[in-house]
Length: 412
Figure 1 (cartoon, rainbow, N blue to C red):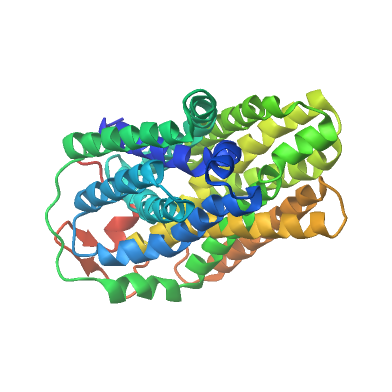
Figure 2: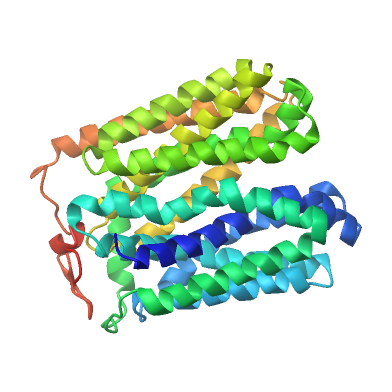
């Protein structure tokens, strides 16, 4: 695999760490600024909303730049946002720094997915995507626990300084390793937006919102479930999250290999498996050993959905994939926020700390139904099996993005 994928994975590792590490830093941040835990939680909520808004916005603003230039700009924005968070003298500026960081998130993974797919032969696209997202999964195994430990020993600000250094390393790697590209032709906003008229693109993003969103219904309230139901000590949450992260790594790598061979069957299997383990977690959460096993399986099946979900959007938006790819990353985060909100509602309604698991299972079942519906509608379309570029080929300074974009050749 090209070394450029390593540079992208380092950037993804930094982004994944800054997204999830805040969960372990909230008590220290709240105490430092004298705010409540719920108010400190806005550091997570506003980040997710920043991704939803920033992903399409930054992608549209970058249509006149090459993808390498945009990746460099986004990593620079990521560095500035995390440095601002670490230096912030007030909690308000912490939130500003979080939003700035979030604006880099969605577009980085969206554009990074396209770059990763271009770096390899067509039959290895899903593997390349899984390697890109491996940075995000490894962040949950290494970055998040390490960030929590650093915060406990040296203060939460030091964690953000360390994340800033990761951003600098990712930026350096992109500059040195990602192949140079020619400037694009005129802005293609109309062509990028036109792909959203394809109902399959919308259905693919709906699968993303409901499918991976189901994971966050459980993950958001994992600490409360494990301490309040399973009986774990609060200090155990760090390694329990690492178990979840290990499952994510395994699911991502396995799915990346099999998605290239059979994308939709892999999507069906991962969604079905995720629905089952989320439902089971309602019961296994009462037993320590069973809970640990289930947490790992949620990570495995949850992230096994990511390569096929992202590849599905790339395939359906082949004529102009940049905005659709970034939009799908926004869909992941919208699903996360939606699931967390719904999970909070059922807890507030008196259904218990394990009730969010049923919310996640139901969301995933609906996502599976959407996947079956999308596949059925696709088979009925004339010319099924051929990629048709909506609106015809789109000519850019990099290449003609039409039928060719659906199967990019490996670059020399």
